[in-house]
Amino acid sequence: MSKAIHDQTVLVTGAGRGLGAAIATAFAREGAAVVINYRHSQSAAQALATRLGDRAVALRADVTDPGAVAAMIAEATDRLGPITTVVHSALADYSFNGDARQTLATLSHADMAAQHATAVLGALNVIQATVPAMAAAQFGRIITIGTNLVQNPVVPYHDYTSAKAALLGLTRTSAAELGPKGITVNMVSGGLLRTTDASAATPQVVFDLIAGNTPLRSVTTPAEVADATLFFASPWARAVTGQNLIVDGGLVFG
Image (cartoon, rainbow, N blue to C red; front, side, top):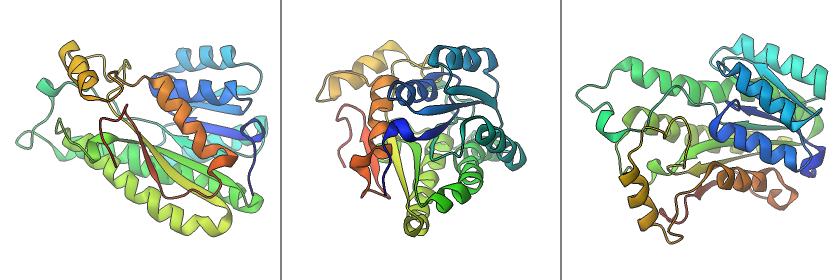
């Protein structure tokens, strides 16, 4: 079974700003109803919902809190109908600055736990809250957001990259379990993006270096990653599950 994007109700976590906001915008452009989840970015999320129109709502929930996620899904369902599609883009606070990163000598358990709590446990909470309705409809699309640093850790951001690697594992095991219910689970992995709050601290020389090493000679934008995300929700991807699509201008192959 497949549904056109304009027939879907899409929850985008971490959609108040950055890549999540670009993804919410892309789905709304294609006619989907969109739930803009945010944790702290209330004014930005509400402004985005206003721009996207009557079929968009901004709802607060910390994805690391199962109760908050369940309450958000219940409210979203009341306002827009059952969630058919999830994009898990929520990111624990992070700054991509290689000079200021935590090294193995300074990395703490708390640093690791914060990233894994949002990326992996947050995904689990959202999946558990949305899968019953998807299974009842025999249709669902779950898309997680990863990173090309898993394949090419050019800067060793240990906490962030290990969390995304674990999320890729959960993506694939979820695909194996949920496929018989008509639910596909895939990942879209961007590289360094120009520019989000998280990449704002990245020196210009790094952007130039990345651009010079990609076949397309450019740094990927949030809008470009967002457009690729649409594929996994579209009818054209109805037979695709458990995959990781790297969207970084060809910096990483495979």
